[in-house]
Image (cartoon, rainbow, N blue to C red; front, top):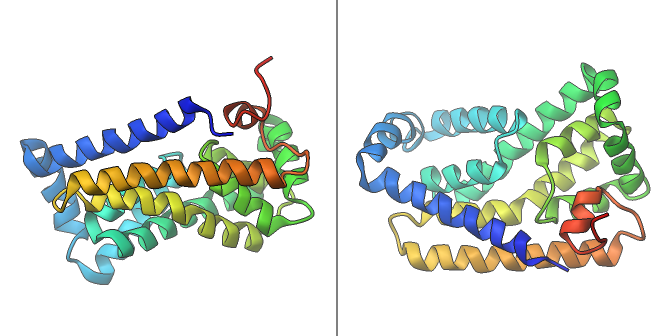
Amino acid sequence: MLRLRVAIKGLMLILSLALVGYLFDSTDLGTAINEAWIDAHIRGQGIAGAALFLGMGGLFTAIGLPRQIIAFLAGYAFGLLPGTLLGALAALLGCLIAFLYARLFGRNMLRRRLGRRAARLDHFVHEHPFSMTLLIRLLPVGSNILTNLAAGASSVLLLPFLAASFIGYLPQTLVFALVGSGINVAPVVRIASAAVLFVASGMLGAYLYHRYRRGLSIDEEVDIALGESEPQ
């Protein structure tokens, strides 16, 4: 149910982020970027640093930066468990910003551009908004920003969408915060653990989608990636 190329794509992202973290920590690139931003403005800055990170992470995820990168940076700046929480909250803030933008300002325009996607999402989550949104967030494929915008352009209720999104964000946020937090402490063990957790969470999401989607589809590309249908 979880196609090999989906797992490989996620594992390559984990390895590439680990490499970037290693370069930050051990080369001049790290001195230029790590100390100039993470160390000076976020790490060790208490509530102010956490608030700045949340604002930055929320803004960047709202405009399309992958939430996995924000989770990696959260792990790097705050450690595993605080980084997981702050990374998930930053992704949730970005989700809220994109949702409200679509709902309040761009609904008509987005319905023209994302009409089919918004209609599919509306139909998918209509009867069980919390559980079906959670199912979407647990999938190892799909676009976070397009889901947020499509939800805003649809009739999906905000509170169940946000609550399920936050819980659904946690597994992958934990995986990438684990990579980010492991640059200085047992990096091989942490990266290997993150890879195993990523594959396991992806397989769980794919299984739940196969088991509980009840014949519904969130997106044709998602169905193809998870082996639920074949390319036309």
